[in-house]
Length: 222
Image (cartoon, rainbow, N blue to C red; front, side):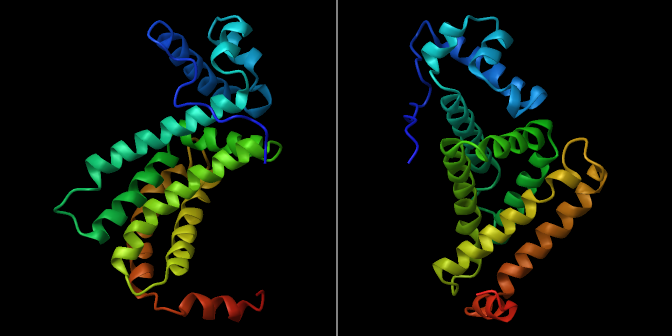
């Protein structure tokens, strides 16, 4: 296990320090989006927000803590969006899953998601702690998708629900280099959203218990 300590919800925050922490987080996000993983250091973040290195490291002794808090805040915003747009009593579970797919793919069209997660994966390739935080983030996404997969098709096992959720999530994330912000086929995203929202729901509804295992065996890779 990596030896980096987990950061609290917002490290170092107290009444007179909140503005400083928010400024550091904004600068950290800007550095990742505009300069990439190689530039992402405490020293560079300090320069980007006009603070001394010691002021930044007081709140965030390691860059890994910045990553953790950025991911926690992104997940909080997703949950808030889900509460407002998806978890409405009047909606069916199929409509809710379609909305989750819509929210995820629309988000991929934005600069933050297209660039941030590309750079996070680059950092994760060389940093076990960041890899664990990114994986934990996506595990939560899979749980959200899985909640509606299970409701739409309750006959599926827990493992089958997870496999379908993973497939849906991976398929959506795979659009990033092709359809994301300023990517070659970004203009096709509305069509891809329409295809995805219908097709994934149809897939979930039509999958029978045992189908996934049979398809896996047919590949000859198991």
